[in-house]
Length: 129
Image 1 (cartoon, one colour):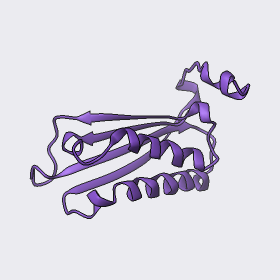
Image 2: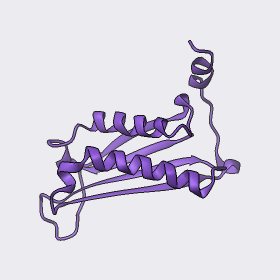
Image 3: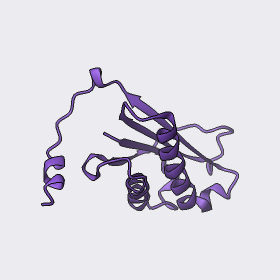
C-alpha cells in the first residue's frame, strides 16, 4: 500500500507538468522492486493558499509524503527514499537551481491494526489480465 501524496504551491503550475511528475514518481517507486504494480498510487494536490519563508511570490515548494505498509527494514525504506528522491530531484532540476524552491519527502509507516483496504486492481494485475 504505497500511497504518495504530493502537495505543491500553485505557482509551480506554469513550470512543472504535475501529471508527468506523478508518472516519474510511480516509475521510480516501481523501479525499486519493492512494490506490486497494483498497489502504488501517486496523487498531486495543488495548494492555492500558502506562505513560504520571506513570502516572495516566486517562492515555491513541493512536499512528498509516502505512506506504506509496515514490515520493511530501515535499509529497504531508505533505498526507496533514495530512489524516489533522486527521481524527484532530477525532474525538478530547474526549480532546484533557483534560490526560491523547497523540496521535501517523508516516509510514514502505516500501523496494520489501524488500516482497512480493499483493492480490486490486485487480482486483475496478478492474473495478467
